[in-house]
Length: 401
Image (cartoon, rainbow, N blue to C red; front, side, top):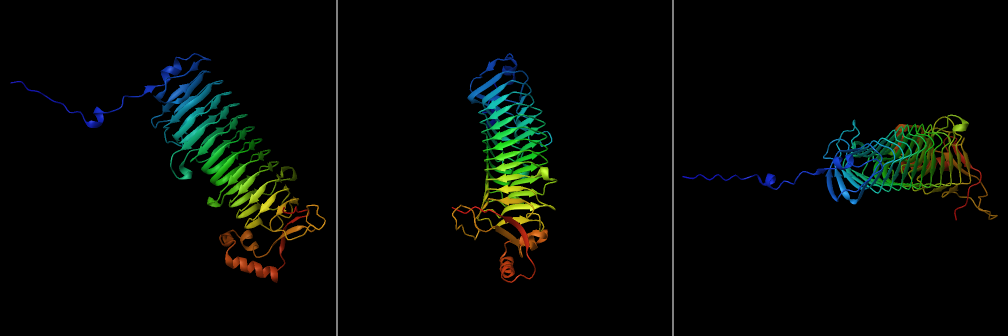
């Protein structure tokens, strides 16, 4: 008698995909200065580049990390990464699991797509790198639990230009002076950008929307924020632009729309540390500008304050008055321009009436702009119960065209 044995493989095993080819042997076989253009397809990571070379995916190569560690590490100088799709990092914040880690100088990273990663691009002690035209998106998670779309640590003279970031935590620049960040777009993040001990950055033409805070500058003097758009930074009491102990910053030609506060800043530590805030537009914010501290000194000229619920707020009487206010446009200015020179005939003044209750008492801030306080404010203006305090006097307000 002949016995016949028939084995049935599990369906999933019988139809399992073959393992992905590793990209590492191809990288290892490429000489210094060489160009690697792998055949189109999906390759297995993680991968490490340790010599100057060009890795060009032509928009048809995908590198999968398999959910472990950092997907691609560039530990070299003078390399080029172009046209890659990078995905599948690990999920460790402590290890900073990222799509791409750069640990070198003078590299070019352009036209790549980085998705389904914890951190997007991490530059660690890398100088003069160009990160241009990449698209980075993170994983679905509460904003505080995501990784940064871009993180620079101890890195100088890098150029971050024309990238698109979405569904990330922050763009973070820590201990990283002298970088240029221009033409980038970020949607759905916690901080659009935060600079910590990173002086002399040039931040221009960026578009930041739907974040808790737009641009935060901490202990980073001599920054230039120019021509940026920040909109819808409302959650957690965030501001479109917030500056703390970062003197001599130039904030000009920015548009800040529909934020909890357009600009928030502390009083300068000394006269040389004052901010220059000019030719910006602050419109439809809960508070156009907010200052806290014991004194003023900032130079605020040529700005447009349009239809903010509260144009300017301060933590205590006298803080705003000590700033220089001149040539700003105020949507609530009630003066005239009889000589037609474009300048109001009388100064624009903002006084503290009942709103000093929520400005000077943090616990009462919840009731700011509430109907009861608005009514009390009206009564105070009609028949003051106490002498109001002056917040600011703009001696030459521009007329609204």
